[in-house]
Amino acid sequence: MSENKSSKIIALRLVFSAAAVALAYVTSYIRLFRLPLGGSVTLFSMLFIVLVGYWFGPAWGLGVGFVYGILQYLQGGYFLTVFQVLCDYLLCYAALGISGFFRKKKHGLTKGYIAGIIGRGFFASLAGYLYWFEYMPESFPKSIAFLYPVIYNFAYILAEGIITIIVINLPPVKKALETVKHMSEGRRR
Image (cartoon, rainbow, N blue to C red; front, side, top):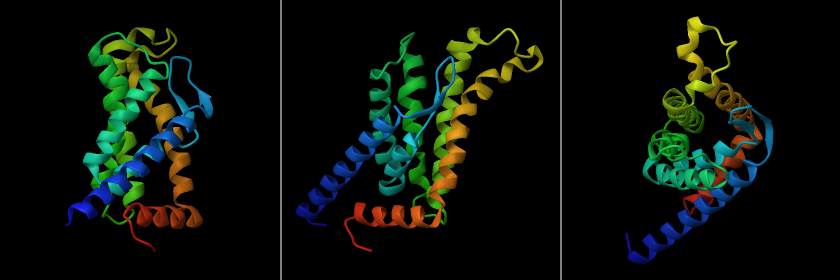
């Protein structure tokens, strides 16, 4: 591949990635509901980071997710330890880039989205176990207390995930997303 064509591809990826991060950041402020100890269902904010992985592959998606995690932390994150910030923000959002492993699969966006949000939920739950467990409500059943971080974090992540999966599989949305994918690759449909 020529150096000129390679530069154009990188520039195109940067533009699409910047637009995706901007859309994710803006839509993260549009909250359908918020949980009392953090976490909320937003208007598709995770989707935009997942799309970067789906368009450009896992390395690019993980990197853009990591950068987005920094922005999420700066948006009003909590600092207890470096590892907590890694789990709650940087690795949590980088995990959305896992979607890139499914970019060439049938129903790749849906599969990649599911994998990405499960990855995000894993790191959020890990942080819950290590740092936030003490905030478990007294009324939570003691027999399943070990599940509290998983239940809490996946409650909002899966709620947004289900809504997003329904929307991205609507025929007009699916067609539009495929058109944008072709544009992100520098080709017309």
